[in-house]
Structures are given as structure tokens and as C-alpha cells.
Amino acid sequence: GQQLNQSPQSMFIQEGEDVSMNCTSSSIFNTWLWYKQDPGEGPVLLIALYKAGELTSNGRLTAQFGITRKDSFLNISASIPSDVGIYFCAGRTTSGTYKYIFGTGTRLKVLA
Amino acid sequence: ETGVTQTPRHLVMGMTNKKSLKCEQHLGHNAMYWYKQSAKKPLELMFVYNFKEQTENNSVPSRFSPECPNSSHLFLHLHTLQPEDSALYLCASSQSGLERLDTQYFGPGTRLTVL
Image (cartoon, rainbow over all chains, first blue to last red; front, side, top):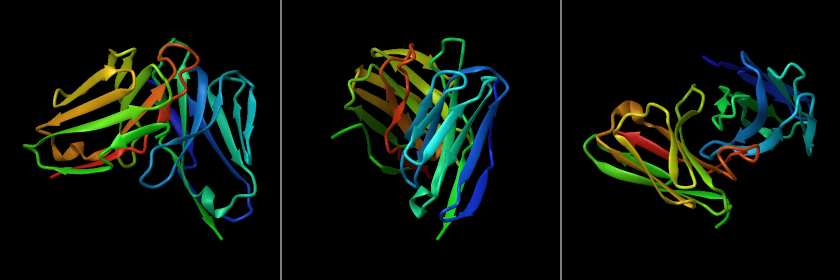
């Protein structure tokens, strides 16, 4: 079956540092979504990507749809304490289904 | 209210109880979804409704029974649950379940504990 590997699983960084995380798939995807989830809340959409090679920013966040269509990357620049949370990627295959596959999340902790 | 709302936010129930989770979306979307989120596991899609019709049942046990009376409301009826059903249940909606405009927006979730 389809698998979505997200890494790293967790990371501790100093405030002000840049952060990078990625998701890789065993299948080709036609859509990638990145979400952030705070404790006790639902995931909040950060960035949506629909085209291979697409690079999209949302404030200090930048995400890219990999050229191979099997991966995606999320970068956070100059991290701040409120960036703490769990970041999820989600991908949809080219089969036309609306079913998304979710990664297991990257837990980010920012040290002030 | 804006976005996707869910009630209750927390629920504790015994294995013989019957309860319902409610979701309402204020985004004018046509598709609604139920997901289960357990610790250390990816989000699991449970049900999908598109224009009030169920279009996906991801092999969910019959003790979970969804209902979608209209495009804005989605319910999950629970009965005779097991302790392993304890999880965060998330509702989501999207413009349409079948096209590119299907970016999903989530509610805050209901934290369910089955004793």
C-alpha cells in the first residue's frame, strides 16, 4: 500500500534557527498539503501545492512540491516559540481520488 | 461561527453508552469527512460525504455510524465502543470531494475516551 514517510519525527531547535522537514512517498502525488496542529486542536492548513516544482510561501514558511512528485519539503525560517507544534504533510495520488494520505508528523520544539 | 466547528470537544463514555459527535462547517463546502487520530499514528480517514451522499467507508466497524443530513452538518453516532476507540476524532470539509478544489479544512476535534 501507499506509504508516506515524514522526517524528522521530532526536533529541538533554538529560537531564530531555520527548520527543514520533508515527506517522501512510494507513489506519485498530484497534491501536497502541509498542516500544523497545536495540542488539543485540529490541523490548520499552512500551504497547498498542486504542481511539480511549485514553490509556495506563507510568511516565514516555504514549501516545495518535489520534481519527482514523490516528495515535498517544508522550511520555516527564523523560528519563534509559537512555531511549536506538530507539522503534518498530506498527499493525494494521481488516481483522482480525494483521499489524502497523511504523514506521521514532525514534532517541533523551539527553545527560547 | 466560522470555519469548521465540532461538539463536544471532550467526551467520556462507557462501552454500553450511545453518543453522537457533531460537526458543522460554515465554509459553503460540499464534502465532509471524519478522521480518527490516534497517538503515534497517521490520520485515518473513516468516512467521506460528497453532496450528502456517502462516497467512502474506509472499512470502519459498524459501531461507528455516520449521518449527513445536509452539506453543512455531519454526525458520527457511537454505540458499544471499545477502549481502543479512544482517540481524537476530526471532522474536515472541502469545496468538493472530487476535484482539485478539495483542500481539506479541519475542525478542532472531539477527544473521545472510552472506559
